[in-house]
Length: 246
Image: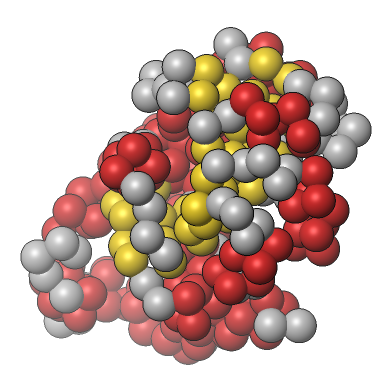
Protein backbone atom coordinates (compact mmCIF):
# COMPACT_ATOMS: atom_id res chain seq x y z
CA UNK A 1 0.00 0.00 0.00
CA UNK A 2 1.17 3.52 -0.86
CA UNK A 3 0.04 6.26 1.52
CA UNK A 4 0.11 9.99 0.99
CA UNK A 5 0.27 12.85 3.46
CA UNK A 6 -1.39 16.06 2.36
CA UNK A 7 0.40 18.29 4.83
CA UNK A 8 3.64 17.38 6.57
CA UNK A 9 3.39 18.98 10.00
CA UNK A 10 4.10 17.46 13.40
CA UNK A 11 1.22 14.98 13.53
CA UNK A 12 1.66 13.85 9.94
CA UNK A 13 5.35 13.32 10.68
CA UNK A 14 4.56 11.29 13.81
CA UNK A 15 2.16 9.05 11.89
CA UNK A 16 4.57 8.62 9.00
CA UNK A 17 7.36 7.59 11.37
CA UNK A 18 5.07 5.07 13.01
CA UNK A 19 3.95 3.62 9.67
CA UNK A 20 7.27 3.50 7.86
CA UNK A 21 7.61 -0.29 8.11
CA UNK A 22 3.97 -1.08 7.29
CA UNK A 23 3.63 0.40 3.82
CA UNK A 24 5.17 0.07 0.38
CA UNK A 25 5.72 3.78 -0.09
CA UNK A 26 4.99 7.23 1.33
CA UNK A 27 4.29 10.44 -0.54
CA UNK A 28 4.30 13.92 0.98
CA UNK A 29 3.19 17.44 0.10
CA UNK A 30 3.34 20.73 1.97
CA UNK A 31 2.38 24.34 1.41
CA UNK A 32 5.94 25.49 0.74
CA UNK A 33 7.52 24.87 4.15
CA UNK A 34 10.00 22.28 2.90
CA UNK A 35 8.78 19.75 5.48
CA UNK A 36 7.62 17.32 2.79
CA UNK A 37 11.12 17.02 1.35
CA UNK A 38 12.67 16.68 4.81
CA UNK A 39 10.26 13.89 5.78
CA UNK A 40 10.72 12.12 2.47
CA UNK A 41 14.49 12.17 2.93
CA UNK A 42 14.22 10.96 6.54
CA UNK A 43 11.81 8.11 5.82
CA UNK A 44 12.73 7.07 2.31
CA UNK A 45 9.55 8.50 0.82
CA UNK A 46 8.93 11.00 -1.95
CA UNK A 47 7.90 14.63 -1.94
CA UNK A 48 5.53 15.28 -4.84
CA UNK A 49 4.79 18.58 -6.49
CA UNK A 50 1.00 18.72 -6.21
CA UNK A 51 -1.86 17.38 -4.13
CA UNK A 52 -3.43 16.15 -7.36
CA UNK A 53 -0.46 13.88 -8.00
CA UNK A 54 -0.61 12.74 -4.39
CA UNK A 55 -4.25 11.69 -4.77
CA UNK A 56 -3.59 9.98 -8.09
CA UNK A 57 -0.74 7.84 -6.74
CA UNK A 58 -1.71 7.09 -3.13
CA UNK A 59 -4.05 4.32 -2.06
CA UNK A 60 -4.91 6.31 1.07
CA UNK A 61 -4.49 10.03 1.70
CA UNK A 62 -3.96 11.30 5.24
CA UNK A 63 -5.40 14.80 5.26
CA UNK A 64 -3.27 16.90 7.61
CA UNK A 65 -3.67 20.49 6.46
CA UNK A 66 -5.09 23.38 8.44
CA UNK A 67 -8.90 23.01 8.73
CA UNK A 68 -9.38 26.26 6.80
CA UNK A 69 -7.62 24.63 3.83
CA UNK A 70 -10.09 21.73 3.55
CA UNK A 71 -11.92 23.07 0.49
CA UNK A 72 -8.69 23.92 -1.35
CA UNK A 73 -7.22 20.48 -0.67
CA UNK A 74 -10.42 18.73 -1.72
CA UNK A 75 -10.56 20.66 -4.98
CA UNK A 76 -7.12 19.30 -5.87
CA UNK A 77 -7.74 15.73 -4.73
CA UNK A 78 -11.05 14.65 -6.22
CA UNK A 79 -9.38 11.42 -7.31
CA UNK A 80 -8.56 10.34 -3.76
CA UNK A 81 -9.86 6.82 -3.20
CA UNK A 82 -9.71 6.87 0.59
CA UNK A 83 -9.20 9.83 2.93
CA UNK A 84 -8.21 9.71 6.60
CA UNK A 85 -8.94 13.16 8.01
CA UNK A 86 -6.67 14.36 10.80
CA UNK A 87 -8.31 17.80 10.85
CA UNK A 88 -9.07 19.17 14.29
CA UNK A 89 -12.52 20.59 15.01
CA UNK A 90 -13.76 19.46 11.57
CA UNK A 91 -16.65 17.02 11.50
CA UNK A 92 -16.74 13.79 9.57
CA UNK A 93 -19.76 15.13 7.69
CA UNK A 94 -17.82 18.21 6.55
CA UNK A 95 -14.98 16.09 5.18
CA UNK A 96 -17.41 13.72 3.47
CA UNK A 97 -19.09 16.68 1.80
CA UNK A 98 -15.70 17.87 0.59
CA UNK A 99 -14.79 14.40 -0.72
CA UNK A 100 -18.13 12.97 -1.96
CA UNK A 101 -16.49 10.25 -4.08
CA UNK A 102 -14.01 9.02 -1.48
CA UNK A 103 -14.17 6.65 1.46
CA UNK A 104 -13.69 8.95 4.45
CA UNK A 105 -12.92 8.37 8.12
CA UNK A 106 -12.02 10.90 10.77
CA UNK A 107 -9.10 10.12 13.08
CA UNK A 108 -7.59 12.05 15.97
CA UNK A 109 -4.24 10.57 17.02
CA UNK A 110 -1.86 11.71 19.70
CA UNK A 111 1.90 11.99 19.45
CA UNK A 112 2.50 8.46 20.75
CA UNK A 113 1.76 7.12 17.26
CA UNK A 114 5.36 7.95 16.41
CA UNK A 115 6.50 5.06 18.62
CA UNK A 116 3.38 2.94 17.89
CA UNK A 117 2.00 3.55 21.37
CA UNK A 118 -0.51 6.24 20.48
CA UNK A 119 -4.20 6.63 21.17
CA UNK A 120 -6.33 7.14 18.06
CA UNK A 121 -10.00 8.06 18.08
CA UNK A 122 -11.90 7.18 14.90
CA UNK A 123 -15.31 8.08 13.49
CA UNK A 124 -16.64 6.39 10.39
CA UNK A 125 -16.03 2.94 8.95
CA UNK A 126 -12.52 2.14 7.73
CA UNK A 127 -11.83 -0.74 5.36
CA UNK A 128 -9.72 -3.62 6.64
CA UNK A 129 -6.41 -2.31 5.29
CA UNK A 130 -6.82 1.19 6.67
CA UNK A 131 -8.01 -0.14 10.01
CA UNK A 132 -4.96 -2.41 10.24
CA UNK A 133 -2.67 0.57 9.62
CA UNK A 134 -4.34 2.56 12.38
CA UNK A 135 -4.34 -0.33 14.85
CA UNK A 136 -0.63 -0.76 14.26
CA UNK A 137 -0.05 2.72 15.66
CA UNK A 138 -1.50 2.02 19.10
CA UNK A 139 -4.87 1.89 20.83
CA UNK A 140 -7.78 2.55 18.45
CA UNK A 141 -11.08 3.76 19.92
CA UNK A 142 -14.24 4.21 17.85
CA UNK A 143 -16.26 7.26 18.88
CA UNK A 144 -19.29 9.17 17.67
CA UNK A 145 -18.20 12.24 15.75
CA UNK A 146 -19.83 14.48 18.34
CA UNK A 147 -17.45 13.30 21.07
CA UNK A 148 -14.26 14.16 19.22
CA UNK A 149 -13.71 17.58 20.79
CA UNK A 150 -13.84 16.20 24.32
CA UNK A 151 -11.67 13.23 23.37
CA UNK A 152 -9.11 15.49 21.71
CA UNK A 153 -8.89 17.70 24.79
CA UNK A 154 -8.21 14.59 26.89
CA UNK A 155 -5.98 12.33 24.77
CA UNK A 156 -4.68 14.70 22.12
CA UNK A 157 -3.44 17.40 24.48
CA UNK A 158 -2.57 15.21 27.46
CA UNK A 159 0.96 14.24 26.30
CA UNK A 160 1.97 17.89 26.67
CA UNK A 161 0.42 18.17 30.14
CA UNK A 162 2.00 14.93 31.32
CA UNK A 163 5.36 15.97 29.89
CA UNK A 164 5.11 19.25 31.82
CA UNK A 165 4.41 17.42 35.09
CA UNK A 166 7.30 15.03 34.51
CA UNK A 167 9.61 17.90 33.65
CA UNK A 168 8.72 19.74 36.86
CA UNK A 169 9.27 16.65 39.03
CA UNK A 170 12.64 15.90 37.41
CA UNK A 171 13.78 19.52 37.72
CA UNK A 172 12.94 19.49 41.43
CA UNK A 173 15.18 16.45 41.80
CA UNK A 174 17.98 18.19 39.93
CA UNK A 175 17.63 21.23 42.21
CA UNK A 176 18.31 18.91 45.16
CA UNK A 177 21.43 17.43 43.62
CA UNK A 178 20.46 14.68 41.17
CA UNK A 179 22.10 14.56 37.76
CA UNK A 180 19.66 15.71 35.08
CA UNK A 181 19.83 12.46 33.09
CA UNK A 182 19.25 10.38 36.19
CA UNK A 183 16.29 12.50 37.33
CA UNK A 184 14.72 12.14 33.88
CA UNK A 185 15.28 8.37 33.90
CA UNK A 186 13.73 7.98 37.34
CA UNK A 187 10.63 9.97 36.43
CA UNK A 188 10.23 8.29 33.03
CA UNK A 189 10.45 4.75 34.38
CA UNK A 190 8.14 5.66 37.25
CA UNK A 191 5.59 7.02 34.78
CA UNK A 192 5.72 3.83 32.72
CA UNK A 193 5.18 1.66 35.79
CA UNK A 194 2.38 3.88 37.05
CA UNK A 195 0.61 3.61 33.70
CA UNK A 196 0.67 -0.17 34.01
CA UNK A 197 -0.71 0.02 37.56
CA UNK A 198 -3.54 2.25 36.33
CA UNK A 199 -4.68 -0.45 33.90
CA UNK A 200 -5.97 -2.41 36.91
CA UNK A 201 -6.30 0.10 39.72
CA UNK A 202 -8.10 3.44 39.93
CA UNK A 203 -6.12 6.68 40.35
CA UNK A 204 -7.49 6.99 43.88
CA UNK A 205 -6.28 3.48 44.73
CA UNK A 206 -2.79 4.21 43.43
CA UNK A 207 -2.59 7.46 45.38
CA UNK A 208 -3.71 5.71 48.56
CA UNK A 209 -1.19 2.90 48.06
CA UNK A 210 1.70 5.37 47.77
CA UNK A 211 0.66 7.97 50.34
CA UNK A 212 1.08 6.57 53.84
CA UNK A 213 -0.63 8.69 56.53
CA UNK A 214 1.74 11.35 57.77
CA UNK A 215 4.36 10.44 55.15
CA UNK A 216 6.28 12.38 52.54
CA UNK A 217 3.88 11.58 49.66
CA UNK A 218 0.93 12.81 51.71
CA UNK A 219 2.83 16.05 52.33
CA UNK A 220 3.41 16.40 48.61
CA UNK A 221 -0.24 15.74 47.76
CA UNK A 222 -1.29 18.34 50.32
CA UNK A 223 1.02 20.87 48.66
CA UNK A 224 -0.48 20.08 45.26
CA UNK A 225 -3.96 20.49 46.72
CA UNK A 226 -3.09 23.88 48.23
CA UNK A 227 -1.81 25.06 44.87
CA UNK A 228 -4.92 23.81 43.05
CA UNK A 229 -3.05 21.49 40.69
CA UNK A 230 -6.07 19.25 40.01
CA UNK A 231 -8.16 22.31 39.18
CA UNK A 232 -5.35 23.59 36.96
CA UNK A 233 -5.39 20.42 34.85
CA UNK A 234 -9.18 20.62 34.60
CA UNK A 235 -8.83 24.24 33.48
CA UNK A 236 -6.32 23.18 30.81
CA UNK A 237 -8.83 20.74 29.32
CA UNK A 238 -11.57 23.38 29.43
CA UNK A 239 -9.29 25.93 27.73
CA UNK A 240 -8.47 23.45 24.97
CA UNK A 241 -12.16 22.78 24.39
CA UNK A 242 -12.92 26.49 24.26
CA UNK A 243 -10.18 27.07 21.68
CA UNK A 244 -11.32 24.13 19.54
CA UNK A 245 -14.91 25.36 19.54
CA UNK A 246 -13.95 28.90 18.63
